[in-house]
Amino acid sequence: MLHVDDIQLSFGGVNALSGVSVHAEAQEITAVIGPNGAGKTSLFNVISGFYKPQKGKVVLDGQDISGLKPAARAYCGMSRTFQNIALFHGMNVLDNVKLGAHTKLKSGVLSAGFRLPMTRREERDLGHEIEKDIIGLLELDHVAHTPVEDLSYGLQKRVELARALVMKPKILLLDEPVAGMNREEKREMSRFVLDVRRNWQTTVLLIEHDMSMVMEISDKVVVLSFGKPIASGTPEEIRTNPEVINAYLGVGDEDTASSEAAE
Ligand SMILES: Nc1ncnc2c1ncn2[C@@H]1O[C@H](COP(=O)(O)OP(=O)(O)OP(=O)(O)O)[C@@H](O)[C@H]1O
Image (cartoon, rainbow, N blue to C red; front, side, top):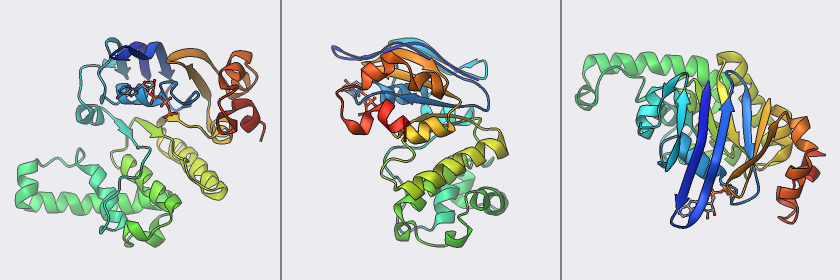
């Protein structure tokens, strides 16, 4: 489904990624983990087109998308969320979610600017689709018309997920989806990611420090350390891999794979 092959990315003298390959199989949830500075964010930025690597390629559903800009990758069916919440204050949930739809509307920017009838019709249809499918699935109905700034942190993250889903992506990239959440919010987010995969057969690739979430929902885990892949396998294989445990030793409790995984 998604094949990221032999990526080399450096910033000046710093090798952020060396020989990193990740394969995300269709409809699976693949997690990329690693201690701070391991290269996870850099890898996501390469996959989504924000960084151009010195070497390597990104292939989505057989199409080499390495040369495409982020927006073009979105047209190809790739959608992502970001670590920090990036919602528009002063707008309600529904309108924020609709903003994720620009690539779905057939009419161009020009007609949208003049608000021609077709655009209004498309917007209305899309609004119905969003309310029925995405808002419903992510249980945001009760806050659909609430300004986003009035929502709890967990709900705001869920709105971001909803926005990323508007284009019905083939692959969803989640950048630390449960960072900063409490236990209950984490549990809910895990459930929603699983629901999205089950309902829409979406392939998911996520970066996450929270080992209990990773171990619970992932089909496969890829481990990076100092910009290099050191292991990949099922959560169970990763949990007991001595190289992985070593990579996490001495980087603080928050990041310790073995201790958190044991929770
Ligand atoms: N824009 C940049 N300019 C220079 N160096 C960078 C840049 N982005 C990342 N790096 C370096 O690349 C390496 C990998 O960083 P990256 O942020 O990808 O790691 P990470 O695994 O996402 O870390 P964290 O878990 O802390 O978010 C680090 O040494 C970092 O300092």
